Image (cartoon, rainbow, N blue to C red; front, side, top):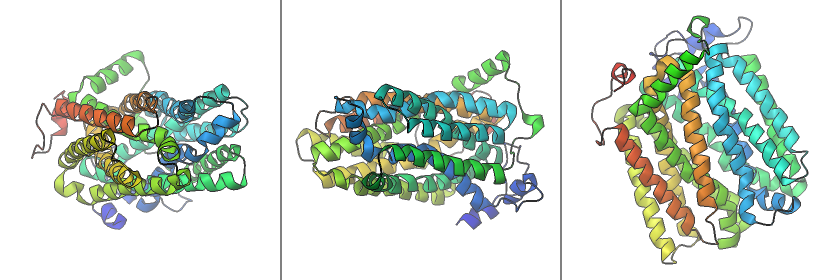
Length: 441
């Protein structure tokens, strides 16, 4: 499957944003003394950079009650801040790193960001109070946001359906983290203090830093780098925020991810306080994550045939229906653990069908400012999703109803922004011309 995806893309310059690339374009930028970076290794490396973000969330989930007790946190809902502070850091960080990568190149910025990520994780392991932990978690998220540059690397090399397919394939590898990380975190807590989780994050970040240092070539040619002058930044921001397609799909991502972030913040409390089965959380969490991975895999197989628009819009419509069904069950007290897991798995599958495609659709008109676009879009979507997660999570009161209501509201809002992007029409049969989108359509 990876072989066919690589071979279907004709050779092109890595700096050409309008045409897809092949493994040959990666190889030409690799050091002459090194083995060329192949397509499969490229997918795994990009996914590993994204896993740096995810593992610092998912492996942490079983430890949230332990951390709250150790640091004298009396309100159990405040334990969610360990996750949300990290998310907020990611949101703010994405505003910075992509723009810097447009000026100084992708590889250099990735190396700086990954180094800061490892340092922030190691410093988090030394904290003695909750406020300091939240500060370092924010800093760690700020550094982890440098992995948004991976989207710019993909955009440097691919476009259109190929770009959506590559994003989906890396998303599948990325989703191994929520499948395995909670169980890993729970096992580590059995043999070591919770502080060792942060040591684990720092060690993983160091390994990925070495991988990038030794294997990733620069994908942005010097002649395509941009100055960071005020006028250039204003022009790029106006293009990103003034483009209906870019802004509409970016806000739709924020609400789709809002469902996910609220679930991440509340899942440990739901299994502990609602179902009274906290030890089952990693297993049930993995099942839900697998549904998202399966959806992303199906998307990668059929996106070229059915189109990004059709698949993602079907996904958001299905998410609205599933979450409304969960609201009804929770309202009338008929939602048990089995129905919760089934409906939550369906919700996350819909997220898997939408986010990657929405991201590709939002980036499609942004080829001329890919780095800045990735920064602004990532800032808006991630920070927005983190705020939504905090608002929904603070409504937890021993029931799954707040999560169901919040997810349904996010789904409806996401659908409205898709309608905004598409001028009120869904399932357009034609593919949008990139030139028209860049012109402001």
